[in-house]
Every structure is written in structure tokens, then in C-alpha cells.
Length: 105
Length: 393
Image (cartoon, each protein chain N blue to C red):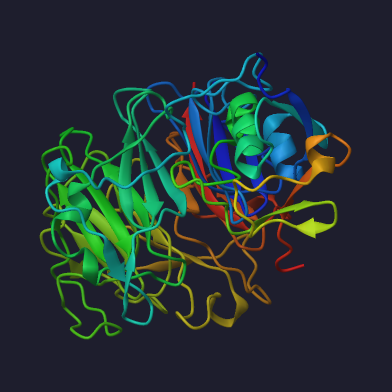
């Protein structure tokens, strides 16, 4: 019996979070189950614990209000965090974009 | 030879300014944490190379940084730098500030007053002020918005609220000042480890005499025309409090309006604005060796957050208030419209006490002669939020 395949999901972080994590513009995280916002952010925080609390609240897991999730030219910010991300993201063809909202120019 | 290290928090990063005891030539490093708001940095009196920094962002929230080499390198306490070799699932985080709602805390409060008078739940926003312990390098206090005080005993790896402050009953009357409902002042009594003073804008000043188990408001003598009852126990917009270590029962306060002093640990306050041209302002500090010599930077008004007539002046009292003199040598006396924020003044402990302050225009001024003359160490930093000074051997 085999479990879900391990997916390598690409994620683009905003500038300041790249600096905190000391990574380049794009990272890859491995997801063993469903590829959702929740599982991707879980994987990011497990690999880069210095980002805990910067994308979502420590306890409520609610997205920080000035951050947005985009992928495949769609705004996924208000989708359920347990909704499946687009196949292109799950297959590593497109990145999940974590973007700081533009406020104040 | 002694030297000084000035820790400058700005709207766009941290800067460290270092000089020998002459305080004439300066080395500037930074920006550290470029692009982030650095509300405050402060070093441990026990281990001066251990520095804590509050790094915040409206987008990404709170980060707590620490250095153990005097600010050359930084880390988030308890968090490995860089990518973890294996996924990790820490059960604590240096930026996790959770308000205490446990039954053990007695009667945790859930709301405070909002600008419009309605009640709002407490919500953590950022750390305004960091106060390292006087006796233990890994114990440190944090004053946060929405107002509360937290303590860490593991070098900032985890934080616990001293929740009795919010639990004593007046919380629903606390309200935010223009900058938010911040706990911005923490003073540790060097002669009594159980005594801590804190101040909140806009609630007032509080004191604990039992290490944080209970707190009492210490606002008698304060008058504020912007609250319904001007001499109410709660609601005063205290901007900053300073104290000299040799006289821990004497406190000096810059309130929204009025400069005040107390000689009985805050039980009673007396106005000492005297001949100040305006007694609105944010900063106040005490000379390192003369406990009755104090400094303020008068600001025109709460509607006009800049100096009178565009002339930046520090005012000094050598009598603990009431009698003040303007200090202008080296400071711009025309066309200057900067502000000096509440945590942006500090003093060093060299024989000739140095006075420092930073402005919203990005200047950090130093007076190596107790305020008689001033010179800008730097002219063009981002807007300065805080200034602390370490005197090093």
C-alpha cells in the first residue's frame, strides 16, 4: 500500500520573508498529502521556523491581513485554507505566490 | 578607554553608532533588518553584548531579534538560522505573545476602550519597549500594544504575560493614544527586584511591589483635560517616565501635556513644567550623575507635533523641574519641524554625561557635555523611533 505521492511545491515569498529565511526568491517544500494553503504553509513553517507567525497567526492560523495568496493568475486569499490548490501548483508547474498587499504605494 | 554604543531604532531598520569616550568620531553600522520598523533595542546591563531588538511590520507582524556579540550578528532566540535540515515543529516562538486568559490569572479582561468609546478585544500588535533585567541576562520584559507587559526568562525564546496588570479591573477604561494603546515604559527598581513601574498611553502609570502579582494605578496629581474627569484614576496619556538609579522613588514624567515629578514612587505627582515654553512633549530623561538634572524636548502642541517656531531645543532643569533653561548650541534654530518620539532620548554614563536624542527627520544628536552643546552624529537616517546608549569599558 502506498500513501499520497510526495509533491514538490514551489513558493515565492515576499522580499522581507526571503531575508528572514535567508533564501532566494523561490523555495520548494515537500507535501506528502493534499496540497492546500494549510499544508503548504505548514511545510514552510516546519522548514523555515523563523517564519512562524509572519504569514499567519501562531494559534488561530488565520492569514495575516496584509498578506495574500495568488496562484495561476487567481487570488486564492479568501478560499478555504483546506481547498485543493490548482493542479499546476501541486505539480510544481506554477508557484504559490505569497504577496504583501500593496498599501500606501 | 570607555566607549559608547548607541542603538537606534528607525522606521526602516536598526543602526548602531559607536565611538570612543570623546564622542567625536563615530562608526555607523546598519541598516540591520532593513525595511522593518525597529521600535526599540536595548542591551542587557549584565551582559552588554546581549542586545534585544523589536522588529515589526504591518505586513508580517512581530519578530524578536537578539545578538550576543554587540549587534554584529543577530538571531531569533531559539530559532535556527537558515533552512532546517529536517522539518521542525517548535512548541514556542520568540514572536509569540499570547494574552493570558487562564482561569488562574483571576479575571482576565477581554476588552478595552476604542477611540470611539466602544469596547474592543485585546489584540497583540507589536512590542514597543524592551527592558532587560538588571540582574539576569536572559530575563527580559516587553511592553506591547495592545497594552500589556510580558516577561521572558529564557533570553526571549518564549514569553509569558504578567496578566495581573490587565486583571486588576480598570482595563475597560484604557484607550489608545494616537500611536495606539501601547505599554511604552518599563522601569525596574534597582533596589527592589519586586518593584516595577510601567506606563501606558492612554491609561496612565502603574506600579507593582510584588514582582507583577498585583498592580496599582499611580496617577494621583495628574490632570488631563481630554478625558471626562480630568483627575480620574485612569485615562491619562503618559508619554514617558524616567528615573535615576540612585533615587528609585523619584520619577519624572512627560505627560501628553505637563511635566510631572513624584518623590514617593508615584503615589503623588506634582507639576514641574515651570517656565517651559510648552509642556507638551514625548521624551524625558535624567543626567547620569546628577539626579536632579533632567531633560525634555518641548513640542508645540498635540495638534502640531513639531518644535515651536521651527527651533529645535532641549530644555534642562538642574533643580528637578520648575526652573528650566533652553539648550540650543548646535541644534537647528530655524526651519526645523521634526518630532522626538517617546523612547528616542538616552544618556551615557561617562564622567561627562552624554545626552542623545533622535528625530523623526533622521538625525541623531549627541551632547558630550551634559547638554551644553550638540552635534548630529548622523543626519539622514530614516525616521527615528528609539535611542538607547550603552557605556562600555
